[in-house]
Image 1: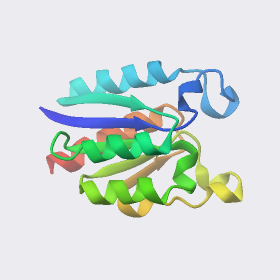
Image 2: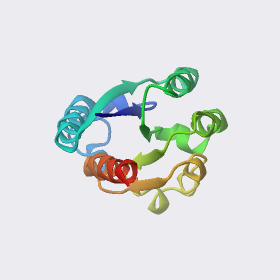
Image 3: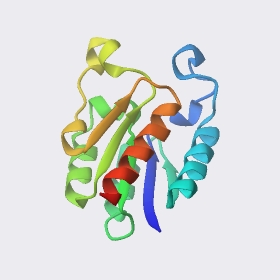
Image 4: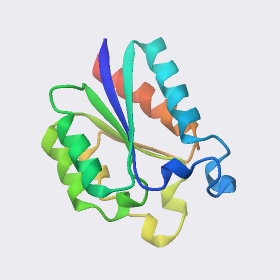
Length: 145
């Protein structure tokens, strides 16, 4: 069974109460459970991780090498600012898919640039919680091909 690491960054622990008009009403736990369930259906074991601190996210990415087949990552605001998260993804040489619940390209100008997209195999944006499932399905398909 393939193993996939799902990483959520800063403020994503606030899903369900944080700007529900943008992010929906599902909590992070709800989203994680739906990804775990869909992962089982696809033959993938999903481990989940959330942290508000950039260094802890880097540590988790670095620890993924040799343990996981791929990474799903919603880095939250770190998407637009974190060279070290980008470099960690590049260093572990695992296929990664970038996830955003909103369409970052249709939001504030500062959100239009992703520092991590260049080291990811794909980017899924704009489908709220469904973005996670679509990213998972894409990554599993990629790993199976």
